[in-house]
Image (cartoon, rainbow, N blue to C red):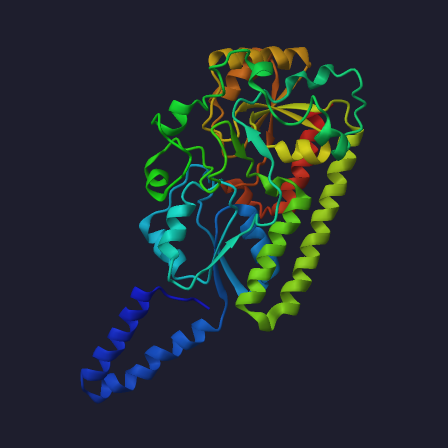
Length: 397
């Protein structure tokens, strides 16, 4: 059920008019043949466009035969830094729905949504209704948590979230002890201009390559962003899937029962992943892991594990030399034997840490985007999350 933009539809109407006025029995006879496929195409399937793999996967699982899903961020790319081409933006405008994560993940989304105005495309913010974690640019990854005398490794969600000295504030002092070292999230690097006020207007968004990707939250100051990596929490992913289901029902209400049944199956599988993850963490010897970028705050919140991110919440936020040394010292102090790389993030900085620590490499999958190997192996959200559970189990030995 592919909708076309106003310009595209106008072109079709003009073409039909010219054909009708061209004269000749042959042209008149051909006109119904030209119209018939268009009518058939419009009743086939909804054309959906997504930005990250979990949304693509959930949309396919829920929509089944009634959807065609295209993920506009290419295999192996990073949604933080991806910019769609003009042709890709036109394609989205010709679709039925644009489904995006939100929470500042997709740097291009404001410009794209502006392009879609008036095109009759449903705009679906999949993270709507999810309470996002705040992320402090001056983060320390709460490295002092290992010294808590009363830490009992129960990994409970409530204990983890509400301890005064372990609240995900990622304070700068614990990490680097220098006021001007904040994982390259300084004001100058962040916005390239002293008077940037985080209004994230469309023009600023389109031309600032080093923007911190929090484009929709005007009330946030320079020190905090919201963590967009909600899909890594299987329980929060239920909300992502439900928002997609609701959008599909609105677009094709006659298939409500079909979409609802498929959603319930997705929900049940996500709940099972949550149980498997919790069981792994409860049996683990350690609770801290060293990873290439600090994208796993929702695992910290849900399961009580703790990340030491080499880069910041965006992979482009690389550490300073001083911070690198702090990370190396902490990895040695905690006896961490593994550095967790990710499938679509450059490894250069993490390789330095690995070599300095004398650690082995393991690979986590952040699920943001597939790589070629994943496509060839027909991986989905659930298989990749189960692989992550296995990798993390080894890292926490």
